[in-house]
Length: 297
Image (tube, rainbow, N blue to C red; front, side):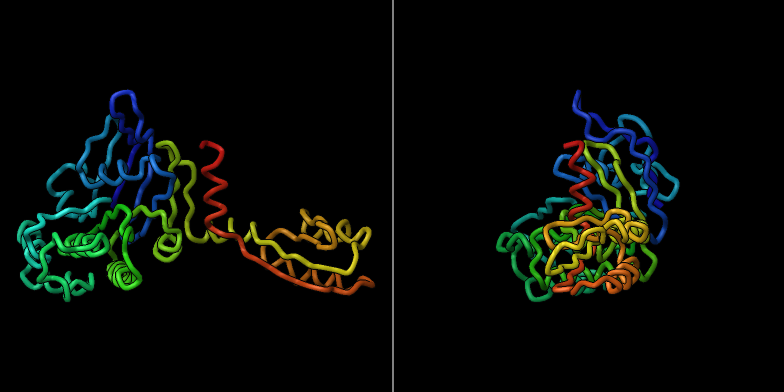
């Protein structure tokens, strides 16, 4: 549905994105992650047909992203939304509804989905940042576009706005729409994405499907078993089950997925020692993200 083929974008000598090849399949939700300045916004603007590649190609449903037919297949939410301040929220949404040629009923539906009904008669100049973001989301979902491209969609949203956004996107996903979005909120990413693409300094450094990410996080899980004393030779006995077992004081550290832990505990129970404490934690997306981006920062 959305296809980047060796996409590069330079602004003079500055490289924003280099040789990006990434395909977002129809009905798939892909999250772009990366530090500030990593090329996420440039990538999304290229998908929306707002900037042209320096080299390579960006296609929407097989057409160049700047092609009018390609742009009709897509709806875009920019990172920073703005509307004429004298207009009411309803008037702004109605303007974009007519611009996109949507049915008249879509305005009220979009405002309701974005939880803006109560403020739709107020002038945009009185809106908070979160309310502007909600209005931007309402405008983005006005057309029944096959793909949504959203740049930091949850920025400035309060809990009610987040709930409205999640409900809106999850409904579109159930209907088979495609989603490409960026976010610094890893909770958004874990909840919505089928695949995760990480950009650093304009280059794609990692791409995981949801099952692949689950496997990577499982490998980063840790079980800690505390004893009243260190048991000589115990770590060595366990390394055929969990190769990275180590001691930290009187705690035995067992890295690895949860499926290893029952066998490790069964082996420990054969030893003449009492367990004083047991904790387990799973791998975290934020730590994996930091690990992936740190070497190139």
